[in-house]
Image 1: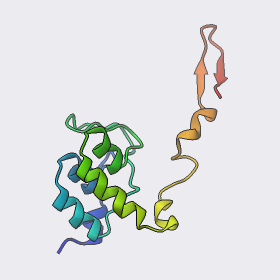
Image 2 (image 1 turned 90 degrees about the horizontal axis):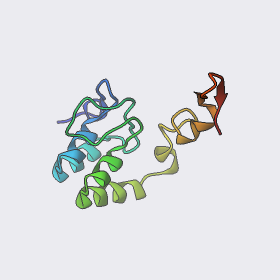
Image 3 (image 1 turned 90 degrees about the vertical axis):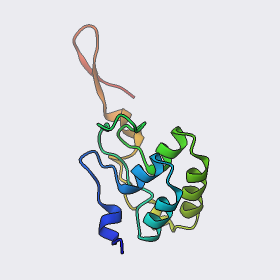
Image 4 (image 1 turned 60 degrees about the vertical axis):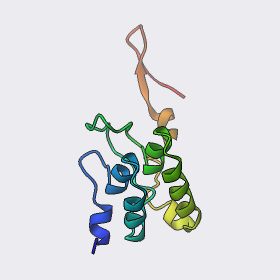
Length: 118
């Protein structure tokens, strides 16, 4: 039997088995992983070294399925997501993982001065 630990383990890029199952169009494997507690909110932490995945930092299994036009996988993930509590939906969220971090980014302008962008 697949354990919760194995369903939620991530590689060096933050990709979980659910990321790979979603990318491989394997609806039954996605369902098994979800039944074993795989996180819908797991995000990749770095650009993937796997060239078969349309993946960059911050991608969830839903992003991968949607970018690959895998409508049945998207439907499954959204159905499961809809049945989760707010606590589960926000489990991996933090201000540092949101995309609103642009206000803290610094860029070097053509005159060599580093400035914050908003």
